Every structure is written in structure tokens, then in C-alpha cells.
Image (cartoon, rainbow, N blue to C red; front, top):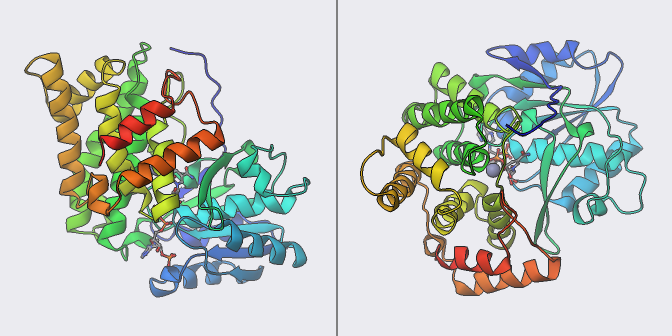
Length: 385
Ligand code: NZQ
Ligand code: ZN
């Protein structure tokens, strides 16, 4: 096992009725800005619960953080929050609202000239305004990590940042808030969480059996609970299990002491940036081709994954690897997630454009062995057409 440092200060308030508890988590006297998306929280009672919980606080609202949150929108929030002397922000929504809020709180405290540098130049975030979250969509794990992915519409860039200052102080995970999710978002959430686990698990063995089995337990639970969530999105226990899986998939626990890949995410973000395809769907397109392309260096872990998660235990090594990739594709497709670029009307011209953008950005050394270069990205994407 590799050396590691593990730090995760996020307090989780899990279960029915927990939104009411936020009043004790936000400092009395704080000037709070609530950030949210396009209004789903007003239709399912989440907004009302938040307002009720914060009736003793001074509250301001910022509405309209879009999916794949836009830098342009978030900078408006930064401007308002600074003028209004906001000292606590509460994100209420899915990964986009939480990610957007992480950027808002980092940009509010940023002392450099241009907050875009946090994303484009990896300018360090050295402090941030404190924030909490009320999660309404199990998928990204943003509620219990410090990462964030922001899109700049002007340049069609989708870039990530993270810092020890952008962990939420607390996150409420009430499964009842998910009862209004469209099936499309449930499918997205399952595939996103599943891929998060695979990016931290399908690498190479370092003799870390606990991390392996933790990863496999999340995969197996998603495999069981995911289809149930689609069939019965108002079943509390199913949604509770799905929600906790998605959080555990990317809160840092399964990553400790093992190599991680993240090339699928890095490449897939380009497809969202250029074509607005839902994040999870871009992962479902890139992952199978990447696994096939890198099957030699990932061999042992793919075989283990195939056997322990999909029961693939017969045939030659090559046959087992292919059967495992096929099982993964079949799972995604069973959730109504297409796995080829052509399904999204994306062609070779986009592959060329991504290659060009990576060249301009000087992208190199992706993957757990830092051996995926731009030519490899091109071949992976061509195989996804
Ligand atoms: O905007 P509203 O009206 O709230 O509607 C949202 C949005 O249209 C809707 N929704 C959310 N909760 C709902 C609901 N509708 C009905 N009932 C509810 N309870 O769902 C739509 C999608 O929301 P969004 O937040 O965009 O989805 P998701 O949580 O999948 O987040 C995706 C974003 O997270 C980033 C992605 O790149 C993408 O930008 N990621 C963040 C990560 C992180 N911070 O660690 C890791 C991930 O890999 C990912 O990259
Ligand atoms: Zn993801």
C-alpha cells in the first residue's frame, strides 16, 4: 500500500428531516447566501424547509446556477455576495450548485487579480468563505469532497480545482429530497458514482485489499440499488442507499494508498464543454474504450473487477477482459445511458478538436501510470465513435 494522508472534515447530517438541523450548524448572526439552481427545490419543498430552518438568520438568495455551472453566472454571485458582506453560503441542489458554490466562496476570498486563474492557472486557494450544502441529487460526491468543476461559456472550457478550504462545513443528505428527480438524473447519478469508483479501482494492484473491497462493495451496491432507484424513485431505503453510495464513491476514503486514474473524467469533460452532453453520459462513452485501450496495464484489476462484480470467471484472459467491459456497457445501457459518441451525434471532427485543444493546453501524462499522451487520447476517442 502507498503512503497516504487522509483528511475529510465534512460533517454529514444524513436522513429524513435533517434540513432542520442546519440552523445549529450555521453561526448565529451569519449573513447567509443560499445558492440554488433552476428551481427544482421550489417544487419539492426543499426550499421551504431551508427557509424555515434559517428563519433566525439573515438570508439572501442567488438563483440560477445552471448544470455544469457557468463561471459567468458564478462571478455575478461573487459580486453580490461581496457587496452584501455575506459570510456563510449554503448550496442547495446537485453537484453543479455545490461545485459552483465552492468556486463562489473561493473567488470571494481570492486576493489575486483574476479568479479565473484558480481554474486556468491552478492559482492556489489559500482561504475561502465557509459554506454548507443540502444535497438533492446523489451523483458527484461534491457534498463530501473539496473538488469543483466549472465551465466558462465564452471559451467552452470545463476545468477543475480543489483545495483544503473548499470542503463543505456540513452536508445534509436527506433521501426524501431526491423523490422528485427525473429518471434521467437518477441514471446519470448511478453511472457517475460507478465511474468514480472505477477510476480509483481499475488501475494496478498495490496490495490494498481493504480499499479494493470497499470499492467493490460500492460497485455491487450500485449494481443492486441503481435499477431499483429507477423503478421506484420514491422508495426511501433505495434512495438512501444510492445516496450514501454516491457520497462514499468520491469522499476520498477508497482512494487512500492506491493509484488513481481520472483520465476518463479528464477526457470526458471536453465532450460536455463542447457539446453540453450530461457529465455521466460522457463518462459512459469514454470509459469502455479507455479500458480496452489500456487493458494490458490494467489487466489484473479488470480481471478482479470482472470476477467479483460481474461473475466473469471463465475463458482466456482476453475473453474475460472483453466480457467484463461488455458487462459494464450492458449495465450502463440498461440504465438508458448510451455508450457511443455517435449516439450523441458527435463525430470525428470533435475528436480532432479535442486533440487540438489538448495540444494547446499542453496536456500530457494522464492516467495512473502517467502514460496516456495526446495520441492515446485520440485513439481512445476514435474507438468511442
Ligand atoms: O437546477 P435545478 O432546477 O435544481 O435542476 C437540477 C438540474 O437541472 C436537477 N435536480 C437536482 N436535484 C433535483 C433535480 N430535479 C428534481 N428534483 C431534484 N431533487 O438535476 C439537474 C442536474 O443537476 P446537476 O447538479 O447538474 O447534476 P449533478 O449532481 O450530476 O452534477 C453534475 C456536475 O458535477 C460535476 C460535473 O462535471 C457537472 O458539472 N462533477 C463534480 C464532481 C466533484 N465536485 O467532485 C465530480 C464529478 O465527476 C463531476 O465532474
Ligand atoms: Zn464524475
